[in-house]
Length: 278
Ligand SMILES: [Zn+2]
Image (tube, rainbow, N blue to C red; front, side, top):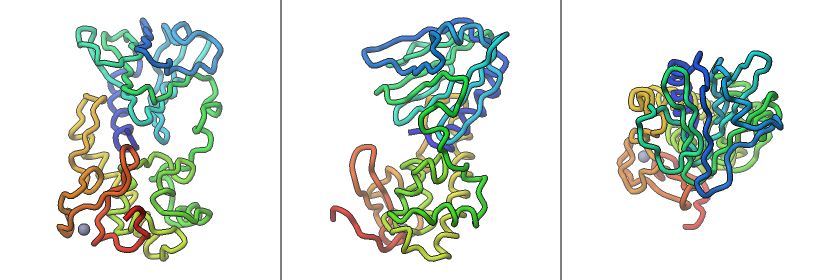
């Protein structure tokens, strides 16, 4: 699942490569799954966006937002890739990846494609972003909160700290993978209750959030290049590293959960917490 670091770099690449270009042709494919585009404008998606110019690309939380302008209208295409959605830059000669749902042919000759293995992502076409589900209620971006604001926002939540970090309405852009990384960096057990955290631990968590996301964005930028459909994560310290040695203390990394909901942590560096299922 792309989170803030990946989507930040995706946006940087798209700002460089597609802004100012026109969508010459828009083709939707439906490879055996429900269509991914939710058109909130009550116009036909391909008609609404054809011949529009990409005026800007930005990120908010886990959404990538394209601002599209036409002579008498402007509209947003908001993409929430969820677990399996990916944007791809390609040339017309590049082979179509399986489960390519959307191909936009751009005036510069490139193609902007949307690929989604399990059709979990959502594309919204709207003139009003506040209509997009889960968008209006997003909390601030991790770099836009002060330590005091972070404490204040955290206060109403009483449950396990990892569960709080991944809530978009608390802070936007953090998902399962980077929540594990942030908690490892802060040396806090993912299942500690928020109410059990000391003031020092909350300060550590705040700084770990910012440094982890900043460092990860730099690493993703270096490794992704313009292959924006990839998700480079070899550099992660604990997430998806079950049984590998903790980079800080050498203890084998613990795993709780299964499938897309796994939690990895170091039981030596991140002590405490009620260990579920053990
Ligand atoms: Zn450790």
